[in-house]
Every structure is written in structure tokens, then in C-alpha cells.
Length: 309
Image (cartoon, rainbow, N blue to C red; front, side):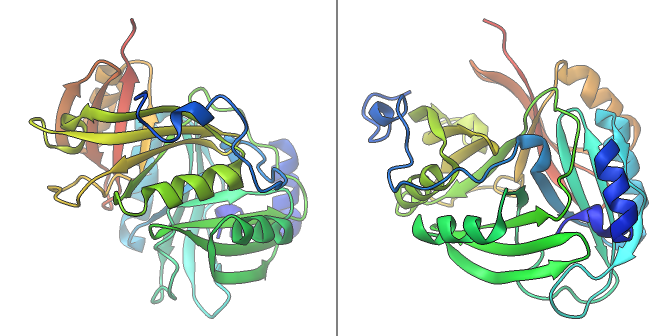
């Protein structure tokens, strides 16, 4: 489900034309290719991988405006369409910012299951091939491929219960490069993290940047503790697996995407000016300064800037 569907197929086609722990079992493998099953790489690029955000129709404009005011960027035209394989109706719009792409949905009808549970939409070079690769690397297919006005879609689930949407365009899109690549923040249990990481690496042809078994617990709201954190990078972008026991206070686990900005204080000032709420005040680790916020309409996100060393 992508928001490019807001226009007719012809109009959209025109728009798109324009426009480290040594004890980790993965650490030794991070320097070499992880796709051990001989799969092809179906990724296109991180600017084509959007966070899926569901807001109430009455909050739609306020949410989109707050994102643009906070991060800058542009939007597509807002529209109404059916973006599921069964009958439904939603407001929809894409938001392109320098720090990530947003797909925004404001359903006017009840949302068919399992839509609304998928965290991201990944553009792939060939949907049928991507489904074969996903299944071969351990994913389940929750929604089999279906047609839309400009392409095809499907929803998959990785070990650990992580849902993502895969999509393909009949006419190849052309989106601007990102200034910084957002991180897909995945909370998984210790029992399933190994299976999740193995499957995702095989699918994405990614590599592990770090596997820290004693990451600072302040990152998940538990400053007295440590936890395991795995950072992965691929052509799909960044993904951080946060391995926890599920004993988390609100809003941790709700922030499905982390956005990197140059100056956190400046970004936070812009956000507050458009009534973005601060849920977790700014904190620092040796890697980043970060905050967790809630945009109008309920979307929760982590925002961070890197600590220069």
C-alpha cells in the first residue's frame, strides 16, 4: 500500500518521472556477504522505503503539516482511493522529507486486516521474485500480491512478528536522494532475534554494522540496565533490532522509525512550534543525542543527531 495511488495511473506516472560485541554470533560474519541462500538482491534504494502511518481523517492535514514544518520537504497531492485488495476507502498522501519518506493513510472505512500493522513499504525490482526470496529466507506471506492502479503489493511477516509491505511500480519511480537514511526500529525477543536477523540479512543482502550485547538501557527507558542492540545496513536502508524482555514503559516499542537530523535542538524547536509533543526528553549516549516525540494524530517517532567524536 503506497500513497502514490492518490492520482490516476497516468498522472502518477508523470509525477514519478519528474520527480560491536565480539561475543555476538553475527559479528564475524558482518564483514562478508550474508545472503547464504543464493538469493538475488531485490532492493531499489532507501528513499523508496516509506514508513506507513495511519491517522484519523480529521487529523490528516495537521499531521502532514507538522511533518513538513519539522523536517522540511514536499508532498504529493492528497487523494482518496482503495489501497487494499478488499473494499475500503482512505485519504492518502506521500510526504518526502530529507530524513525519510512517509506514506500517510486516513481511513474513512474500517481498515481490513492486516493493514495498519505493517511498519514500512519497501519498493522491490520484481514483486513475484521478491516474494520468492522472502519465503526462501523465512518470511510468511500475510497478503498475497494484489494489483493497484500503478503496480502490485503484498504484505510479509518476518520471524518475530515483524510485518512489512513490498510493492512494485509499473513505471519505475524517481524520488530524491535522502540527506540522512532513517532507521527501521524493530523490537524483538531474545528467543526470535537470531531467526529474524538471519532471515532479514538473507533477504536484504545486508550486513551487520554492530552487535552490542551491552547497549545503554537509557535507549529503551531503562537507564540502570543494558540490552542487546543490532544495527543492520542494506540497500533497503538502516534497521536496528532492539532485543528486550518486553518490560518496557510507554512509549518504547511504539517508535517504529528513527530519523537522523543535523541539529536535534533546532529540529525539536520546530516540532514544538507545531504542537508535536515530547514523550521522552532529550538524552545522550556515546553515539547519539535522541528524543521521542508524538506528532498530531498520534504518530510516535524517535529523532536523533549523531555525536561527533
